[in-house]
Image (cartoon, rainbow, N blue to C red; front, side, top):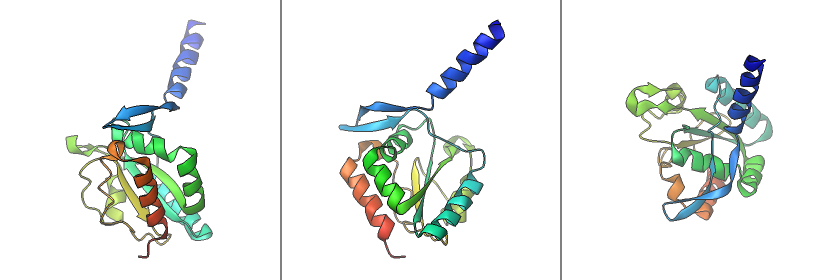
Amino acid sequence: MIKALFSGVFAALLLAGCATVASKVAGGGHDYPEARSYAVSDDASADVDAALARAAENGKRVMVVMGANWCHDSRALAGWLATERFQTLIDDKYELVFVNIGMPQQDDGHNLQIAERFGLDELPGTPNLLVLTAQGELVNADTATTWRDTASREEDAIFSELQTLADKAV
C-alpha cells in the first residue's frame, strides 16, 4: 500500500517537472517564458533523421535545438518556442527537435555527434540552434552556436531571426 502510494506521488512529481511555466520570468532585463524541463529523447539521432524525412515530405526546414535542462537560456528558448506565436511559425515552417547535450564543458556531453554531423566541431555553450534543409544542409552555420544569450534577447528579435532562417537561401 505504501509502495503504491509512493509510486503514485513519484510519478506525479515527474510529470509536474515536464510542464512549462505559464508566467514569465525576469532575466537580463527581459521577460521570457521558461520551460521547467527541457524535453529530451532516448534516441536523438533517430529523432533528427525522422524530422529530416518529414521535412522532405512537407517542404519545411528542420530546427534542432541542442541544449540542456540545467541551462536557463535553453529553458528560455524552449519556453519561447512553446508560445502560440512561435508555435504557429514552427507549424508552418519547421520540424522541431530538442536534443540534450548534457554538460560538454565538464566532460559529460551527450549527442555531440549530431552537431558534428552537420559541420559543427565545437559547441561553446547552450543552447545551440541548428536550422537544416530537408537534405541536411546547415542553413545558419554563422549563428548556430550564438544562442547562449537567449534569455537576454527580445521576443521580436528571436522571432524575426527564426522567420528569416526559415526562408534563407543556402
